[in-house]
Image 1 (cartoon, rainbow, N blue to C red):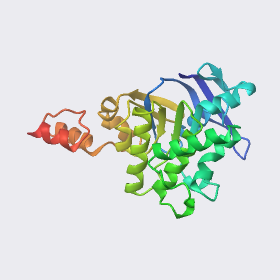
Image 2: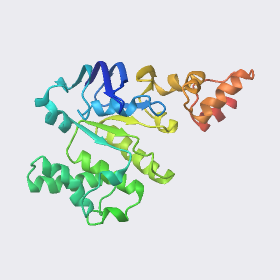
Image 3: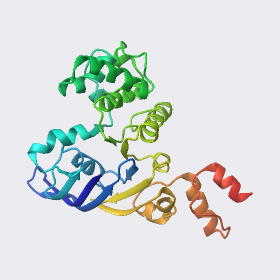
Length: 273
């Protein structure tokens, strides 16, 4: 389990002015959970994510990964072997001349034996739907394929937790779908705990739990239906809501009572029929 206890993160701007990016965050993330974090730019989402594998250390408070304290320098390697991270731009994570060399890179840094690396690379590429692409050059791949290779490079190191910081932000709709299908498969079939940061509400609607951040604080959390039924709150925080949830809110305001927690077109059709 990941336990975040009253975490405060303060950094200095160029003027030496101190800014508090996280303001007393407390959150437990259960093993096997699919957690989505949403919030507009500057709400603290990425800052929080970077605390999960010691890219950042709390100014105050504590982050525990399976009981390992992120503030302990001796625990950094152990924590990073448990928590893998994938970022927004896959081009920043792909460094080798072939796909298989790229996926193998992290395992090589861990000092894993070559035969085991070969097996892990093959398994990771198959898991993300990229088997047969091992000898391809990464720069010839589509955006969605590149991101799936980046994910393969992380899961080849066998983490328990996978943190994804807006991994679909730079992708076209097809690439987004490919990556999201991969992430869900890793969660449901491989048992990886997922922490997914996104601006896309349709991605958040598929989570087990949604956390809403604003000004470095958690302002709401719950299952997607609970969160997205709070249309006025989300709009006040400059966030979108799934179209059918917004339509349900409009219909209720117009006097037609429908379930305010609807998420999909199919659910809306059933409600209106």
